[in-house]
Length: 121
Image (cartoon, rainbow, N blue to C red):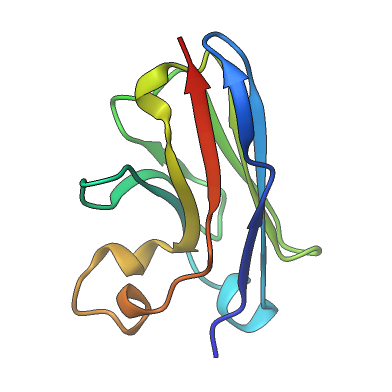
């Protein structure tokens, strides 16, 4: 039972913005570092941004300065604000525990449906 529901994706022009939201169960969210991942067709899933339970953040170099990850523990949500979008940001975006980046983690095999982000040039 992994409850992860992503929303907020859509089609935007290059340079535009989107705000993605993830609703997660409190049991997996509150005490864990969370992350946003993305996967483009034919590509491996990649880690985009992380946020710890103490709200320390980290970003992939490709999105640093453009994306901001945040969390609201009371609402069990994690948000990815995406600005200055580029066509190469096009992918399905997923949220999960940061630990899911480890292929040996239980959560590495438990993903939600994701939300599609498409950026036109």
